[in-house]
Amino acid sequence: MMNLLAYTCRIPGCQGPRSGVCINSLSLSECPDVIPIGEEDSAEGTSVVPEVDPVSNELVQTGGVSSLDAAACDALLRARGGTVVAIVAGPEVGKTTMIATMYELIHRGRLTAYRFAGSETLRGYEERCHLSRMASNAARSDTPHTPISAKLSFTHLKVATLSGIKDVIFSDRSGEHFDNALKRPSDIAGFAELKRADIILLLVDLEQLLKTPHHPTSQVRRLFMAMEQHALLENKPVRLVGTKADLAKTRDARSEAISALNELAVDLSRRTVGRVSVTSSLIASRASAGSTQIGEGFEALIDEILKEKEPPNFCAGSSWPEKNTELDALMHVYRSKQQ
Ligand SMILES: Nc1nc2c(ncn2[C@@H]2O[C@H](COP(=O)(O)OP(=O)(O)OP(=O)(O)O)[C@@H](O)[C@H]2O)c(=O)[nH]1
Ligand SMILES: [Mg+2]
Image (cartoon, rainbow, N blue to C red; front, side, top):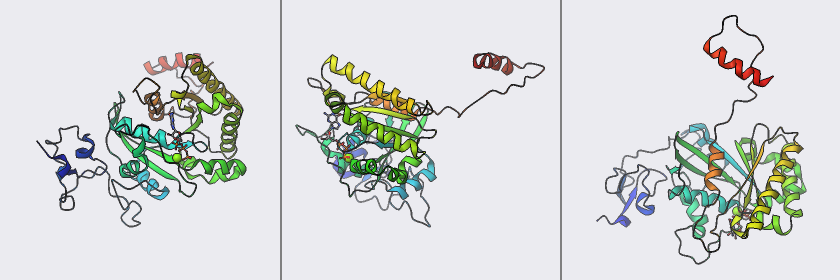
């Protein structure tokens, strides 16, 4: 049997011998990228990430950088695109834990339609979130607070989906930055991830929402309106995500949480006269009491993140050809629905 401790993988981001998950979906003894530790430098790399901009050296390290800063994230996006997910919430709401849990669930193959296919930020994730890993045997898992001094950072995940490989990049910053932006809403215009985002996740702590609804509701509304007033929501779906659903223990608490979230989502969308679509869902990064199941709501969330965008404002013209083709006949049905 292979002594896996003596091996590593030369594909950036894959830690096959350590994690047991092979990017190539092979057994580790078969995978040609598994090599003895110490031979990494001489091995001819089959990098899953193209070299990026050697002139500016913007993405100098690949596979295993702690996390991407804004410049490295930009370089990655220019090299191969990807979906940028901006996460917005005050302190302690569960931003970092959510990213860690998404990472962990995909890495361990716990979501039905998604498989791990690599990452540029694996080491960073492990450093920041090892305490919250399912694999850790800690009696209580916890996530370190993201200090105000920490800069905006990005976590990258390459996901194999039923329709091909997709790159997803989650932003994370200290919740205190958002608290400060509430004191001076114009600051939010400088939040780089919001400008670049394809989807915005606006998080709300369900435990707080049930106990003292006024404070979290007002925070979410003010953050949403600050983004709206600085034109950061144009053409972006917003998902209102209720975190810590495991703490809404009883059936009543659960349905109260769902309807409070729905109401808030409708209220936010109405404030933009329906221009911004706001949907809502719950997630739990911890198991509910009496269960070992982790990750409620995460598959639905990644479905939403990776959903193909509808083409903007498609509108059938009013002119009509003299002779109908089959396509015209189909369009006729569509046009009559529009009228
Ligand atoms: N029970 C439960 N606790 C959670 C969940 N998600 C996060 N937590 C806990 O909530 C606390 C805050 O989580 P973080 O992920 O650090 O929150 P954050 O939004 O990143 O906070 P800042 O870094 O301070 O901005 C930690 O103690 C987590 O363990 C969850 O789904 N269920
Ligand atoms: Mg954090």
